Image (cartoon, rainbow, N blue to C red; front, side, top):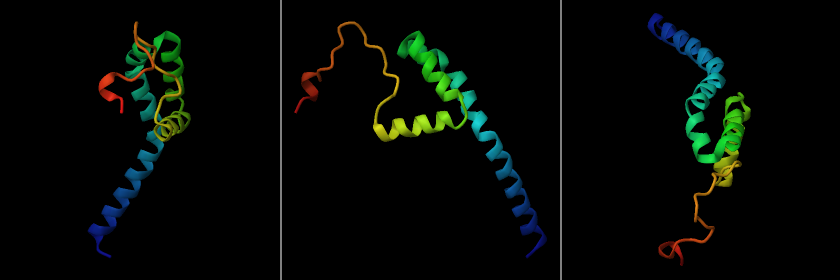
Length: 93
C-alpha cells in the first residue's frame, strides 16, 4: 500500500469519526433554525413540542423516521378557518 493511499484512508477515518460525533448536534441546529416556522404552522404549543422532540439527539431522528413511515406528522398542523377534512372536488375519485 502506497504512502498516499495510507494517508487518504487515515484522513477518511478521521473525518468519519468527527462526523459521527457531530451528527446528533447538527439535528439540534436544524431544529432551532425551524422553530419559528413550526410554531406558525402548528400553533405555539404544538410547534414547541414538535421542535423539542426534534432537538433531542436520536429522539428527533426516530420521530422523523416514524413520520416518514406513517406518512403524516405526530403533531398535526392547526387548521385554517373554514378548512375541512373533505377532499376538494378536483381531488375526489
